[in-house]
Amino acid sequence: MMTFTLDFSSILNIDDEQFEKICHNNPDVQFERTAQGELIIMPPVGAESGNRELDIMGQLWDWNRRTKLGKTFSSSTCFKLPNGALKSPDAAWIELSRWNQLSAEAKKKFAPICPDFVVELRSESDSIKTLQAKMQEYIDNGAKLGWLIDPQSQEVTIYQLNQSPKILSKPNVLDGGELMPEFVCELDFLW
Image (cartoon, rainbow, N blue to C red; front, side, top):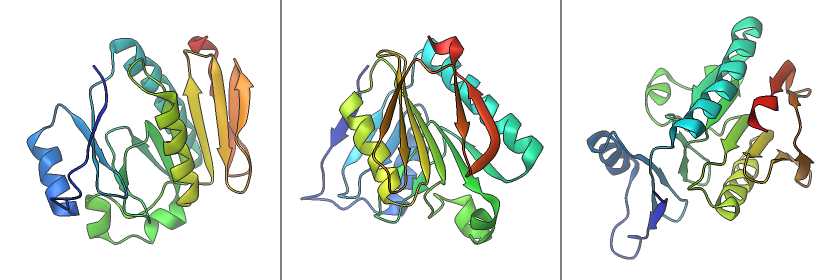
């Protein structure tokens, strides 16, 4: 199955409430909305991709459970970025003080915040160019660190605020740097 982008923007502006209804009425499909109002339809991932995603999310969750420095989010979470896009990274983390600034109501919906850290794990149906653009969009909207993990090319691209992307070949581990002290993510299972 492939990802599809539908552009209704010339005839219909899908607002946040309508987008929420589309997601609610179609629970087996994941949706995103671009800043230009295009609707992105993403099929479920295969078992291998889902297992890899959960392993990475589990490591992030475990680190955060121990440090209590923020909040972690799964690929089912959609965030409203400052540019108006509604995006769902495969894994995300938000520093606790930033999360606590949101109202209780904002936390229940598509939170109007860009995560501090995002992970995109390329599945068989993902276009690398689309994921690269998505990662840059996160950085442009305030993410401080992002990992684009591509098992197909056996590369990880590190995105950081105010830096050019850095490509690593088959890294066995990645760390969260100063943003996420002591966070180490093992990736040897991918290669």
